[in-house]
Image 1 (spheres, rainbow, N blue to C red):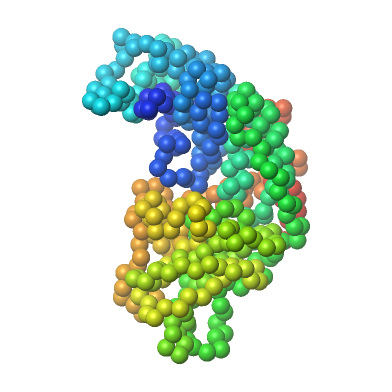
Image 2: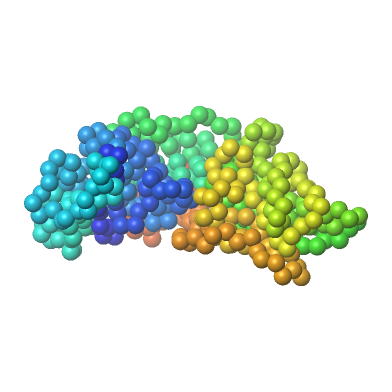
Length: 426
């Protein structure tokens, strides 16, 4: 593991944080696709899945309860520092901003770690007030916690896609490994993040990319095709297992026939989706045309979710968002629009109609990499892990870091090994 600076912080409302530089936490305004979360005794731990095994960020609401595992995850110096930060004020403590008049604590204020900084610097490079440079490998509990958080993250965010050739994972195997890892992390969890209910087995025969005809084809019996587009969707707006995770999953075309303009939408279904889907889980499409916005329920047909919407007139652009009502982020919400990036590279299929001079339906420019870019990196991660899982015993010799029981912390999960072995359709 590379060296990481840890900062003990006071976050307000009685919360304490142990923060690697730039780490995301459960206090962030909107959920991020690349963040793994694990509910633990006395708080929550978070990791960035793209960073691989590393020390987590911690948001602690009960310091006394959390101290039962802080020492095992971060080491004894950090546990002592957290305890001292809560109990005393050191004379060499840096000057902090004055608390607000109506608040007993200043949010986001940094504490010194509460032990000899010269000793910390001697252990692992230069240290500054409030920081401890960590260069030691992950402990066994930290490694198991990372694997448990990853398995739970995979259950929600694995980018299964027939179009992109990323196999779906067997939920039964995931649940089995989650149960085993939950037992390993018993001292950390204290009953939190227990295994979920059993799920039905996935079908063995999955569709091929060639089976999916996105949107309507070029052959239109009547009328004229005015425009078409293909794009992705925001994974935060639908539960897993309903929609293909590809950036080519959502397609639309505008058809003009007998004075009526119709926008046909088609969305590729997730690999292995069979049987009837309850009405409350069926995806909807929100179609915006530069002024008029309409929403329609999608129906399942031939490997895709599809529907058509008639418009009296259309603007110069079309944007299609896919979502399940009442789940995750709602299309059009401020938190949604602020994070999706540009429409072509964002969470929706959007484009300017040919020959128009209008303005695209751009969302606000995000301060973080676009959602499309982030989804692409997650797909690369999944593809790489499946390639590694196809190696003998699912273990690759090029994986850095310490091993526990002969297995690297980020060795493939059982479900990944099984998916990689059954690649006849991928």
